[in-house]
Each structure stands twice: as C-alpha cells, then as structure tokens.
Amino acid sequence: MTAADKFPLKVLILCVDRDNDIGTKTEAKTPIVGRGEIIDAATKLALKDPEEADANALFGAVRMYDMLNAGRKDEEYQVAALAGSELGEVMADRKLAVELKETLARFPAQDVVLVTDGFGDEAVIPIIQSYVPIMSVKRIVVRHSQSIEESYALFTRYVRRVFEEPQYSRLVFGVPGMILIVLAALWYFDLLVYAGLASMFIIGSLLLIKGFGVDKRFASLSVPSPAGHVRLISTLAAAAIMAVNVYQTYTVLVPYVPNDPSLVWVALPTLIGMVLVRATDLTIVAFTFFLVGSGVYYYFTHDTRMWRDVVGVVVCLSVREIGLRASDIIMKAPVPPQNISDPLVTSLLLVVTLGIASTGISIFIVSRMNRRYASYFRKTDSKEASLDEKG
Image 1 (cartoon, rainbow, N blue to C red):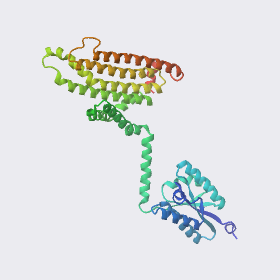
Image 2: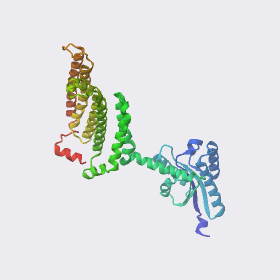
Image 3: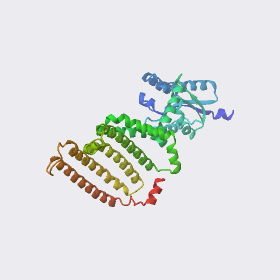
Image 4: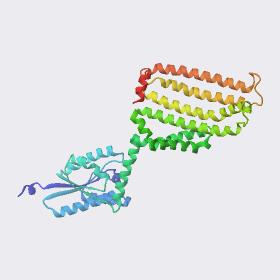
C-alpha cells in the first residue's frame, strides 16, 4: 500500500465570486461546500439573473469536479464556492480570506483548482496561494464576454489615471473648469455674448502653449510647486478675460470717436463714461481671478501676503461700484451735477464711504486672523519668494 493510498491527496475545486453576486441576488450564505449545494446555488442565481456570469462559473466548477472525481481514484476532491463583498476590493478580499480558512477547516486540501468567470476574480490568486497552493486555473468565459471584460478593465484603469495623475487631470478637468468659471463670470455680469470669444481665446492659448512647448520651456527653467500651477492658471484666466475686455470695449467705442480731432475733447467725457460702463465688470473679474489664484498660492506656501490678496478682493468689489456710479454721473445726467445734494453725487459718495468702511473692516479682520494663525504663516522676503516660485 502506497502513501497515496493511506493519505489520498485532497484537491479543492474552488469557485470565487469576488463581488458577492451569489449573496446579493440569491441571499445564499457562503462558503458553499458540496456538489449539491453548489448546483442549487447556481440554479437559483441563473433563474434570478440569466445573464450572470458567476452562474456559469459555478456550473463549470461542478463539471470540473465531476471530471476529476471520475478520472482519479487515488485523490479526494471537493467543490466549494466563496464570495467576497460588494463594498469594495479591501472588504471583499478580507471576507474571502475568512471564508477560505473556514472551507479549509472543513476540507483540508493540499491543492486548489481555481475556477473563475474572467479577469476580475483572478485578483484573489495571491490570497488563495497564501493558504494553499493553486494547481490549476480554469476560466469559464461566456462566448464574446472575455474581450469585453478585459476592455472594461483597461478602460477603468485609464479612467482612474485621469482622476489620479495630475498631468492628465489638468487637461481633462482643469481646462473645462477654467472655461466654466469664465462663462459663469460672464453670465453674472450679463456678458454671455462674449462667451464664445472667451472660450476660443482660452482654448487657443492653451493649444498654443502645448503646441510650441512653452510649458516645457518654462518647466526647464524652474519647476513650480503645485500651488504655483494654481496661480499660473488664474493668471492666464485673468489675461484672457482682460483680452476680451479690451476687444469688446474697443469695438463699442470706435463708432463714437469723432473723425475731427478737434471734437475729441468734446466727446471725451462720453467716451470715459462708456469705458467705465463697458470695461469695469470684466476688469474687476480679471483682477479677482488673479488675486484669488495668488491668495491660494500664498496660502499653500505659508506666506502672509495671502491676507493682502484677501483685502484686494474686497477693494475690487468696492472699486466696481464706484466706477459704475461714476459712469452714471457722466452718462446718465443730462447736465453735470450742480451740488452735492444731487442724487447721483450722493449715491457716489455713499458707495465711496461704504467702500472705505468695508476695506477698513476687512483690514481689521485680516490683521486679527494673521495674529491668530501666525504659527502657520511666515513673512517671506524677496529671496524666499523666489525660492518658492521654483518649488
């Protein structure tokens, strides 16, 4: 009598359902051990969802069990099914490890024949091999589904790279995000008529930068920090908005410029008023973009100049109102105001007063915040600022 007759080799035919379709669709409790129990679970799963690939894998495990059990009498075989979790890879792998221990306690196999339904479930191979060697892997693939599943896995991998790697996410999310912010600003100031021009300018600028390798040339000179990229994008956005602003103001003013140079001085107040009306909003939006990007950069570089940019945003909003009230005096008054009690002059003085008050309040709040968070921020001289620019 040989050692194999006294101690027959125990082989486990193991089917793995990593995302727990068996449990969620049939409410079966895993691990499932035994031919009859496997057939019952596979039948329930196939009736519940005829398109479910795990049902084919379960039937494939039973077929493999029958073939091996009929061919070798000096080995002992058993068939079992394990299920992971629908909560994600980590939870699934932990549950599979627990169920594998339980199965091996019931049937102490020396080898495993792994039966899977394709690409995803084979990720559990290292887990199984940490407990018992894998003799063979059998893939039960429904016709035409193998290439689809592998294509899906490849597509998912590239989508994850888009989300996680900055060189891709800046193009896929950063550029559309910048365009949407500019369009939102144009919509708020009722200037959507220039949305197409602004979008084309931003996209054209970025294509020009990438096409001629301007970004790589700058990167070879100095490598900015991630916060530096934020300031660079906000600066480009501000420049784009100002370019649109200059163009639209110029196109509006050209018909009102007198051909006779001697009449320019007569039309000058009207031209100034029109510049204030047409250019104020976009100018403030551009400066606000620049200050916000600069403030974000200074925040991440622990620079106290961030507070200066916060006050600058408040000042920009105040200057906008002052500019519009001044344009009211120039454009809407039939005759120049004669005294301070004129409603237009009163409105201008009120806006100036509120602007000074809001600026003073913001300076007070910023000074208090600066003292409170002094441990986070530090004063940066010009030399340190230059080093921060380089990363």
